Image 1 (cartoon, one colour):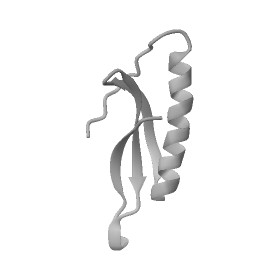
Image 2 (cartoon, rainbow, N blue to C red; image 1 turned 180 degrees about the horizontal axis):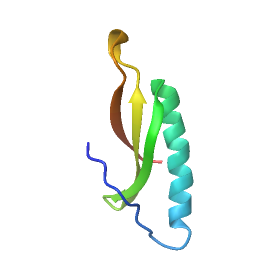
Image 3 (cartoon, helix red, strand yellow; image 1 turned 30 degrees about the horizontal axis):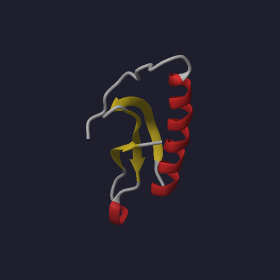
Length: 74
């Protein structure tokens, strides 16, 4: 997945609402993966606002931690 920078503003208050939703989604993703949140952004995809979360997650079988990016619909 590609990380696109720069959230878009859809109207008054839309950015703040997306930011709050994405913050919660990022926390949940970190808890589910045992990872650490590196970055969070929102963007438009197919007419919907989605959250793009980059995490640092534990490696498999004791390997080094790895960076992964997930897209979440809040």
